[in-house]
Image (cartoon, rainbow, N blue to C red; front, side, top):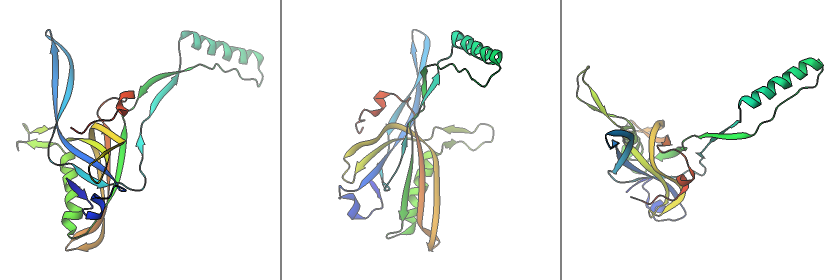
Amino acid sequence: MKFYPSHSRYGNNNNYLFFRIQPKKLRYETKVREGFNVGTLHSTEIIGDPIFFLAPMEFQATASHEWQPLTNVINRMKEIMATSAQEWEMGSTRHKVDTSLIYQDSNRREIEIMVNLAVHSDAKSDVVDPVDEMRRYAAPERVGTGHIHTEVKNPHVFQVDTALGNGTILPIINIKTAVLHGVLPNFKGPYINGYPSHCELSLSFRDMDPLSEQSYNRVSVE
């Protein structure tokens, strides 16, 4: 396990909360039944050690749902009749047709993690290396060097949890498979041997799976 910051006072103290980021290798497989393609599914394989970032004093985890007014032919006819009645009366009274809301869709869960990295013993390993590691995981791997036949492999994905310093998972954030679509470091001085001594690192994750009630079931550590 890798802890940032790496000070021993954080890892063994259960009063501190961490974001546990477990890298995974992503694969897609097509499920075929009786000769028909019935869907493309993704599978993951854990690689490397989990990375623990000390959680800030506050953070948000967004989950949004779309509800729209129920519209059909009858409602549109009622709206036309209401508009006609208003024009007939030629007055200030307005006619409005109220309709019930109907559920449309749910956006995938998103979480933006803001972590602070600061020098403790070495500016490169404490501040720069964790940023480079997350940037490499989020980027696709290029295969070949040609300009025409260059291929790329899928970027890595992650299991994102909240955990104590001893590794115990807490069901605050619990996403089994998330993509990392934003890595935004803000490096700050003073500089030590050319390396920044402080960095505010923003990591933006999005759940690969559609949002449902089951999304909030506790996910076991694989």
